Length: 269
Image (cartoon, rainbow, N blue to C red; front, side, top):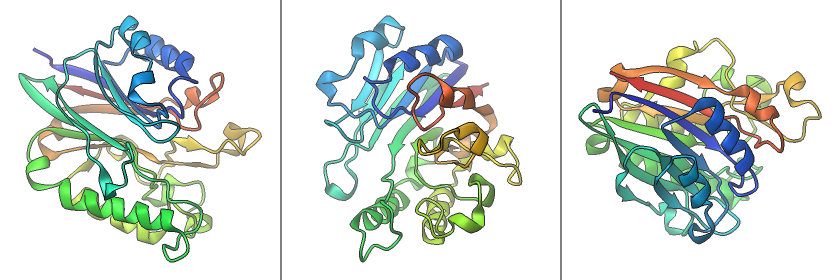
């Protein structure tokens, strides 16, 4: 019986380019399940052999050439794999699968929500409109039957919802990822499904919590102008089994890093 799971979610920003640091993560953290976003490669070119060699025999991959892409790699069997096309635009931004746990299974959703471009106005920036429409579709789906059972939703959700999820609440209120229209809709999605923000269960709301630091800063760590764009949500039936979450901040400083750090979540009976 599977009574313990260690899961990592990470926007890897090209899985083939950054396979060396994925292998470093595997060596240091030894997760049972890895959820990657922004893999940026079609399914046929995904580095399956490297993952198999590392012990991840089970894969749910939804990729496309050069853009987007999500992949769930697991040491545990995956079943009922589902790939949802949000907004009917053909983007690879979601994959779901069942993972065995506690004599039953967990429904695991892996998401890469659109970033939304630079201008928080859908009339002049269609990318922002796409992001809002994507979240509205999430709102309509990820509740009721989807959350009445043990479920996890992870990924780069591209919204920093709370005041201390960004380096400056005041300065970022008009910056995409922290605008009120985004944060309010984001919370509607979470609350409608009764999802628990697992990361904030272990880091109080008045403490800064980041998972992303821009490449633009010369010294990202010293500047520390971060945002929490990556999330771990759990459904109410799974809430008692969340044992901890950790942002692996050091990984942002590894060789040829992603601009996101991995988030580790642990579940146990």
